[in-house]
Amino acid sequence: MSRDVLVVGGGDPAAALAAELSGDVLVAAPEPGDIDDGFVDRLARPDGTAIDGLDLVVHALYPERSRTPAPIAAMTADDWAAACDDPLEAGIRLARGAHRHLVARQGTIVFCVPVVGAAGAANLVALAGLAEGLRVLARSLARSWGSDQTSAHAVTLHPSMFLSPEHAAAAVDATALHDPALGRLPSAAEIAAVIEALADSRTTSGLTGASLVMDGGTWMAG
Amino acid sequence: MTGDGTTGTPMTGDGTTGAPGGRVLEGQVAVVTGAGQGVGAGIASALAAAGAAVVIATRRAANGEPAAESIRAAGHDAVFVRCDVTEAGDVEATVAEAVARFGGLDIVVHNAVAHAGRPGGVQYTRSEMIRPQIATAATASFLCARASLAHLRRRPGTLILLTSPAGVEGSANLPVYATVKATQRGIVKSLAREWGPHGVRVNAIAPVARTPAMDAAVAANPDLETRLVARTPLGRLGDAAADIGPVAVFLASEGARYITGQTIVADGGGFLGL
Picture 1 (cartoon, chains in turn blue, yellow):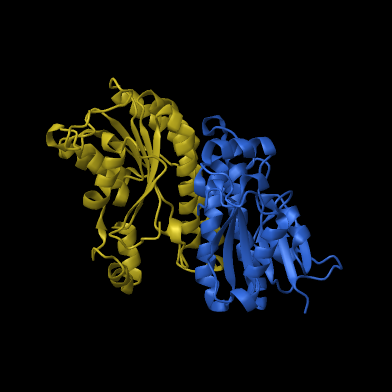
Picture 2 (picture 1 turned 90 degrees about the vertical axis):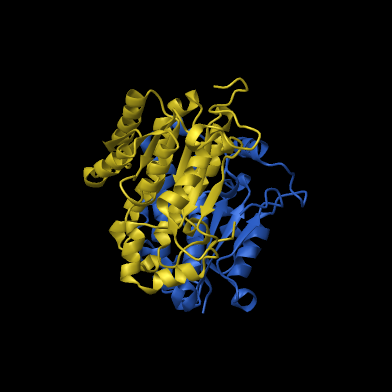
């Protein structure tokens, strides 16, 4: 049986991770509003066949408006919905739709979240709320899906994986006391390797609900 | 403002404010959403007892009016304002009413919560129960923050969001509730960074207390209370007014002037994972 992987999200980190993950990797880059409870059922492999099970789902869906800094007082209700509420609902509905496909393979769902959710960042309140919501969604899924031997995790990543260099630098300068302990940030290949390990029942069958911080040892938050 | 740029009553050497009767919030004005019952009502009564004039902001006059009357009957200032926290116009009007009636705004407590529906995994959550929970937690936190910032900056004041231990540890049976409560924690941490330079503090309280919602859950699942109490070192469920209200009073008081971006878990010690 092939190893079926679904990566959901446009741009990085979704694209960078999809390029490094092994197996039959399907990438979907919908708008949050496109994700309803039947979203996964409607997806098809490149050869047109329907998805009938998933070994790994990687969520990294962060619309541009989530990644665009703005003081909360300057945001409209539409800005807020687009940056936080809509993608949060999309994450929940992706999980609902992916559930039966993951159970069929005793698979794994991994939410990639920016560290701003755990560490906070001025002018990125909506992104932080979205990130922290998704990080804890993974824990809730782990608790309720564990009896099906289906696991859920969160991987917390450096802001540079989500934000423009300028905005990432601003977030780091304003919040980080320390330089990366490793002296560098992890590569997409290194992050993908950890995600694959989380989905590998030979090595991590006893692990679920993990929240791993891969920020090079900068915040170590979450 | 005091001479050192802070607000409120100066601290005394023993760490108290020295205000008579523990009225550490004398002269302050608070808006509490979802204050018609439960934790919100307990917080509102505690803030009022500490000297704050309180706006009871809730959707239903049927519980909002009695909650305000109860506070007035105890000799404190309170008024009910009808407010659907998911409606920007309602939130802005509530803040405007607080300022117009009491002369400013020092404390905003967003406590209102949507019904979480029947317990179960996320795949079993009724579809129509998802967005209202997001709106009441995330959208409403945004609306409360946006509407109050200009007023809170003037004092400067404080914003408190009510989250939950489930917003940290997740929940097998209330996954959407846990998700939106975690979202509020992310909001708190980032708003604390954003508003700190204005002197406005932002914190969260994660309570476990006996409320009408808790009573209903226990009625539906009689073992729930036993299990909750068994995992609580202090051996009982919290009381909204006596156990949770004083936490809000503290976070709003001068004693918490150096605390921002934090979640205070007030659950008798049941959750120790922070």
